[in-house]
Length: 193
Image (tube, rainbow, N blue to C red; front, side, top):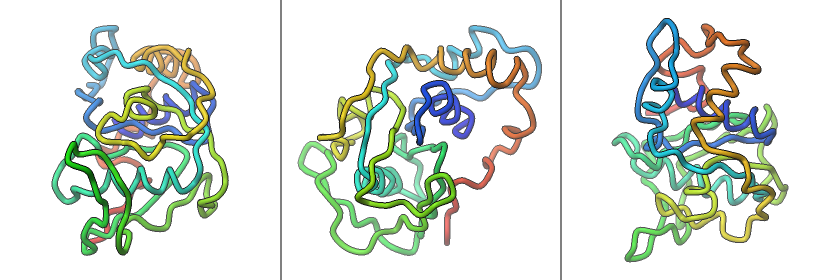
């Protein structure tokens, strides 16, 4: 579901990268016909979507912050589209936060590595378009302050559940195929233990 939702965000909004916080994805889809209600079970919060232009460094910080709790589960863990990465769980999280639980930086060895955008190593100084929820990208949801200073490209991108509907009806031709059948995803995120 993470791959599916992140793909919908990236493809429907035309960004380089799509990110979705895991806590926003609330249900799976069963094989068979998909109803409007099924889609609303996946995204019951009806979050606004947007596109920002962020630096590679901001994206690296977001991935590091999202991976801070692994191997434990966290709603802040980022599902991705348009990029791949690895998380070394043997390395303690180097993320720092303030008293309100907001990201303040990275101090120490990063556990997220081998980040590639479109198959190429991410450039910390380059700019990439990132699509996702306003909650994460502009409202500090899940403590994501690292996107402060990113250029807001578009806030009128609709609601998250509509991106799923449009993705199914458009690029997928009404059928969610085998590319989303593996419950562990297609290997965009590798956990190294």
